[in-house]
Image (cartoon, rainbow, N blue to C red; front, top):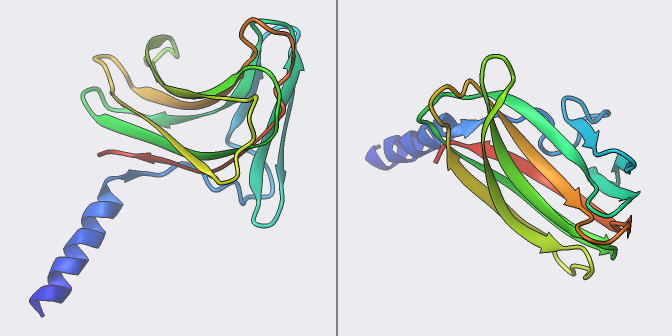
Length: 172
């Protein structure tokens, strides 16, 4: 009996630590509530594909351009968050990919950002790669955006193809 209670307490604690992203597994028939964004002159191509379904990201455009997807969630100042995704570069291109947490105020002004490590887009991956970023919501933050971005950096062209899956937001 005590082992059952201990296991149940661990399951409840893990569930309480999760902040649900909607369609984080990209299995819904549409991309929503993820929002596609891009800088001027960039053509993003974001689509759900495959079985099991994943987000296929690619873009083309000028040097210093970028494109990606984000989802906005409620946040509480002082709370620690971790955003995690799996990625797989299946076709090479220029630039890099990167995830971030963006903190927003009530009036949707960005009041802070934490960048995760970046990954190159000029090499294909044989297996899925896990990326995560952690941060604490600053004073005044009422919302947070979890963001996956493809950057062109100093070279114009196409990013290649990046598959994204299993996006999660937790409160570690």
